[in-house]
Length: 203
Length: 116
View 1: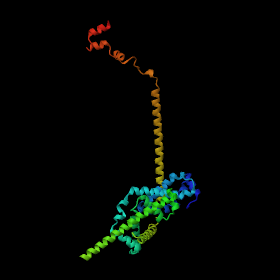
View 2: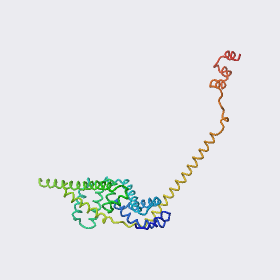
View 3: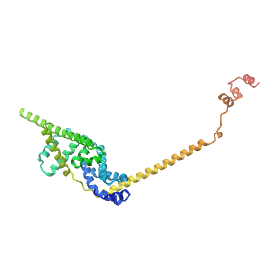
View 4: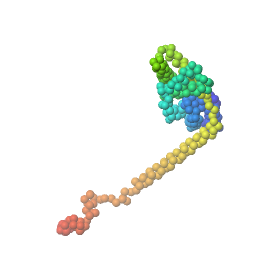
C-alpha cells in the first residue's frame, strides 16, 4: 500500500486533503498502467481523472484496506475498457492486416537490428500495440496487466473476482490469438519474399 | 507450427512485452492534473445536486397532483346532476311532445290524443 489505511478512512469521511494525498500517491502508477493499456498518450490523463473521479464517488463502499489496490485497479480496468470500447480504433490495425513495414519492424525488433535506440523504442511500441489490437478489449487489458504490468494471477483474481483457472484459460487463449497474429504476419512476409525472389529469378 | 518454432515465438513475445513496459514508462502527471480532477468532481457534484432537486420537485408535483385528484374524486356525488329514470324517460323529459309537434316530428292530432 502506498498510503496508510487511515488516510483512506479520512478520505472516505469526506476529507479533501486526505483524498488528494491518496491521488498523489497512486496517480503516477495509474497513469503508467493506463498509458500501456490504452496506448494513446494524449488521452491518458483524462482516463486517469475518470478513475479517480469514480474512486471519489465510490470510496464509501470500501470496507477493508486489503482490497483498496485491487479495487483501484478494477476502476482503472473499467475506465480503460470503456475508453477502448468507445475508440474502437483497433479495428483499423489488426495484426493479420499488418503492413510489410510493420512486419519488417517485428523482425528488426526481434533481431535487435533497429538502427538506433529511439527508433527501436518506437518500433517496439507500435508492434506491441498492433499485436494487442488482434484481441478484444477485455483480452488486451488482461494480457497487458499480466504480461506487461507483471501482476500475479492472485492479484488478477482479486481484480476480476473470478477464479484462477478461468483466468488461466482466458489468458492462454488471448496469448494464442496474439501468437497466431504474430505468426500470420511473419508467414505473409515470408511468402511475399519468396514470390519476389521467384519473380526475380524468372526475370 | 512446430514445437520449437512456437517456443521461439513465445520467447519473442515475452521479450516484446518486457520491452514494452520500459518503452512506455509511467508518465509524469501534468501540473493541471489535480485542479482538473477537482473541477470534474465539483461538476459532477453539481449535477448530482441538480438531479436531487429535480427529483424533489418532481415528487412534490406528483404529490400535489395526487392530492388534487383525491379532492376532486371525494367531492359528494349529489353535487353533480344525476339522471333519474331510464333512457326513454330522460329523452321524453328533454324533448317535450309540444316541441316535437312544433317541429313536425309528430302530428298535432297525435299530440292531442296523447294529452287527452
